Picture 1 (cartoon, rainbow, N blue to C red):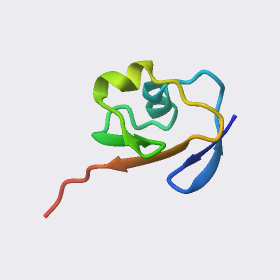
Picture 2: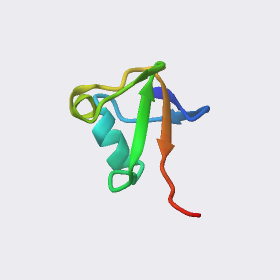
Picture 3: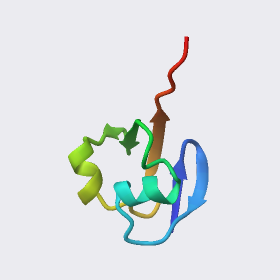
Length: 66
């Protein structure tokens, strides 16, 4: 299925949850915020929210530094 992640079209397997998306993108061990169709998902919602065709996803990763 086709979705938009951080402004780019991406092809993903159907039925993937937001948490599985982080695993797929190798971001599961990072501190991130997921915005799905202009709504921020809580950590609990990531496990149950299924990504759908044409969803717009923004993933923001926190980076430390000084």
